[in-house]
Image 1: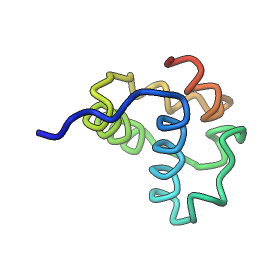
Image 2 (image 1 turned 90 degrees about the horizontal axis):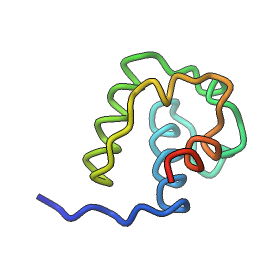
Image 3 (image 1 turned 135 degrees about the vertical axis):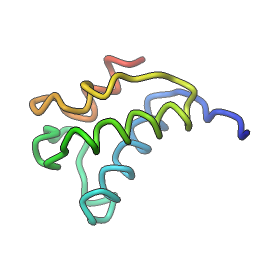
Image 4 (image 1 turned 60 degrees about the vertical axis):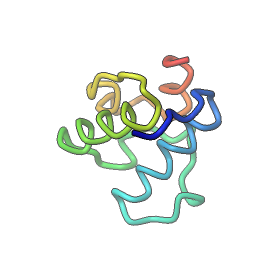
Amino acid sequence: MSAAQPLDGESLSRWILVYLATIIGEPADSLDGADPLSEYDLDSIDAVTMAIELEKTFKFGVHPETFMKQAASVDEIVSSLL
């Protein structure tokens, strides 16, 4: 089992943006952490999978509902988790 990555705002934000980019098939650098999650059209399966992968990576549990808050941005989610 690999060691957890450090949980800091930059690492967490980058991880989320890269994950979102993978889901929507866009380059991670084209995504903005200030944009609302509604821009990415996530469904409940995406949110559950993302929460599981985030927990595996950072050893930090996040409820999938966190990623279903359509008005929230990645920046707001990261701030609320730290």
